[in-house]
Image (cartoon, rainbow, N blue to C red):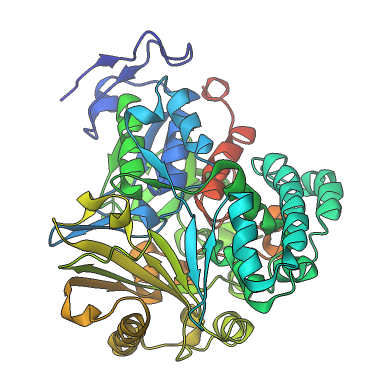
Length: 527
């Protein structure tokens, strides 16, 4: 049923007069919409942000989502009265989200409430020592002094280097599409200034001497799928992003942000079709012209924007004869991020001593990372990220209860781990570790439980090799060397999300959608 709704007269000029419709698949056809059509595959942050930007630029947009609800890796699970964010829980650079509301003539605060975390997260080392990581310089110096006061000066130097990388790598290059080697040549001076050929860990070790502090200041690339001993030191910019704009959590969970973005799309007349997995991207004369769904239905379009994993997209959604650059061999030779093992659980009591974000780190650091990234070996020990969102928002659990998830970086599916056989044993090991450290008698209080493994990432999210973040963000797999936002192989095909430029993490994914504006033509130039 068609429900016309004129956008508010205070909307930006390019939106005024644009009709908004219900989410009926036939609505736009009923109105004989003459705008060029864009199909967006996937409703993760990248797909939702891209759809908003495309609609504002004059496209008729439709999103095709494999799952039964939006979000992709930011999907939200609801079980036994508990709500669990499936993936991203840390929001930095919130202005990138606010931009999307501004484009629609609205304010994000109307739909989403963000709370800044203080501290950002608590780090617990294997010996029981803790470090409260925050953006407060004075507080950080006090924390550092607990380990080695001589490292305070090194901390200041490290943050200066991080600020430089944020300016050069994030502010100047984050939304550059890196469409070809000319873009790389322009960026080379910035890479040189950052000394981007050095690893993140080597940069930290240059300034910080205490071994545990080196861990505390170098684990951040794991949040975007990278080994600190391998990824470029340019990712020290994460320190600066956090310090500049803070670390935030959304009331209602990250899923509340997804819900808000879907609301913006509804106002723009963008339809999302759920339970609609794509079988193949249709190519005619070297140009993307639509998709075929697994149901057999074919949908035509002028352009296709893919928020799905890039390696999976090229290998399984595009016939080999259309791929001269992203051949099967090239895809297979890529170095992929680690897998993620996530245990979601709810308890019938609260644990007030556990903060919203907590890292529990094993004694082995480099050795464990070698097992995960290089040997593809599932070790007996692990480092964990423990997420207790009810520390900030009790509504995510029944009264008197707590919602948790605990995440362990593990090898991707190159490890050949038999997850159906191994999963419960691994979960039990994590539970026993938590009981012996920070969650006493946990097993007696768990009332709901759910697990996802790298196999789920492959089968449910179509993530190649079950990797949590696509290609690992090595220097040789970044910028122009990462799958381009405008496909190297196929005209009219564009890529967004964690596995394309600039990379994973909510800021990176949102920047990938912003980069599309540099390479996608305005709708008025197509028809």
